[in-house]
Amino acid sequence: MIILLILSTACMRGPEQVVYTPDGFRREVSDRLSHQFAGIGTISVPGGKGVTQVVTAGSLVTPPFELSLRTKEGLRHCLKMGASQQERFNFLYNCLFGHSERFAYIADSTLSADACFQNHQGNCFAMTNLLVGAARFAKIDAYYMLVEDIIGNQAQGDTVIHTNHIITAVQIGPERRLVDFIPNSKRYHYVMLLSDVEATGLYYNNLGARLLLERRDKEAETLLRVAVALYPNSYQIHNNLGVLVLRKGIFLEARQHFLTALKTARFPDLVLGNMMKTFERSGNMKAFELLRKDLDKAKKRNPYFYLSLASREYRRHNYAGALRLCHIAKRISGDVADIYLLEFRIYGKLGLKKKQEKAYKKLLKYEHFDKDALPMPEVVDPLEIPVGSVGGNP
Image (tube, rainbow, N blue to C red; front, side, top):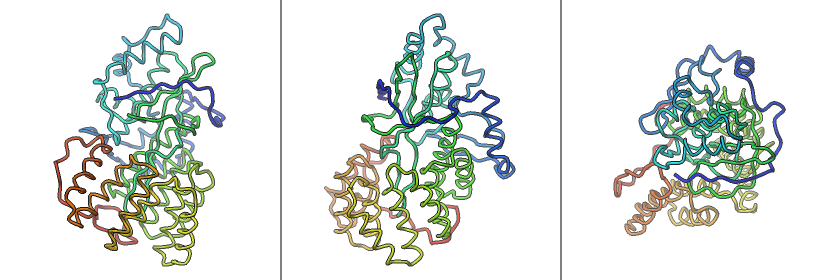
C-alpha cells in the first residue's frame, strides 16, 4: 500500500457547515431523509474480501466516520494526548498506517470507519472514514475532501458510473495536510472541501454505484436516492441516477439527471457521453450523431467516452474500429482496466493469442484487487440488458 502525504494551503469552496456534532448530524440527516426511512429495509453491499457493509434505516443516521467503543479502545494506544497537534497526528498516523501490511487496499471496499479498522481493509473512502474518525478522537481537526480529477469511474456497457475519490484533510496550524490512500496516486488539480453530510452522501453514492455494477438496480436506487438527498448538488450522484433510470427506459428523467449533473460537472464530457445514450436508446439518432461530433471535437481528455464508442463497435463486430477507439482511450489514460478488458475480448475474437495475453497482463496490472485471477480465461461477452428492464442479473 502506498500512502501519499501532500502539503497544501488551497482548496475550493467550503460548505457553510463542515463538521457536525453527533446530535447535529443525526438531526440534519433525519430532516433530509424524513420521507425515505420507511422504504429502506436492509441492504447488504459487498465490501471487499469477505466483508459486507449493511445499510438499514437505523444506520443512516450514524456517520460513516463514527467510532464504536470497541474501535476507540483499539485505538487508545495510538493516542499521544499531551503532545502538540503535529506530534499527535504523526504518532496516530504511524500507529495506524505505518506498516503497509496492516491494511489491504481493495478498490471496491467502501466501508465505515469501524468496518475498515476491524477488517484491516478498505479503499480510499474507507480509510478516510477511519482517519477522520480517529483524528477527531485524538482532538485533531480532520475533514473530507473530494478529488475531482478523472478517477474512480467505471464503464459498464455504454454508460459510465461515477465513484468518488476521497482524501483526508488534516488542519495543523496554518498548514493543511492532505492524506491520500490510493496506490500510485498522482498530484491532483481539483479538490473540494466537503461537509460531513455531503461526504456521507458520496459514501452512499459509492455503495449505490457498487450495486449498479452488480445490476441490483432496486437496491441501488434506494441508496442513490438517499445520497442525492444528502448531497443534492453532486454531479456524480445525479449521473448515477441518470444511468439507473436510463436502464429502466425512462429517457426524459435520465436526461434531466444528466442536465442537472452538467450544471456542476468538472468534466462535463463524462456526463455528456451518458447523455448521448438517452438519444440513441430513444431512437433520436440525429441528436445522437450531433452530440457525438461535438464530443469528438472537444479536447480529448475522457477515455471513457472513447471506451464507450469502442464497446458499441465491438457489439457490432467491427473489431478494427473498436481497437482504434481503444487506442485513443489509452493515449488519454493508460491505467483504465476496462480498456484492456475490451482489448482482451477483441483479440480473442480475432484469434490473436499473443496480443490477447499482453492485454490480459495489462488488465491484471491495473485491476489490482484481483491478483488471484486465472492465467487466461475464455472470452465471455456480458449479456445485454434490454431497454426497460429493472434490476436483477441479466
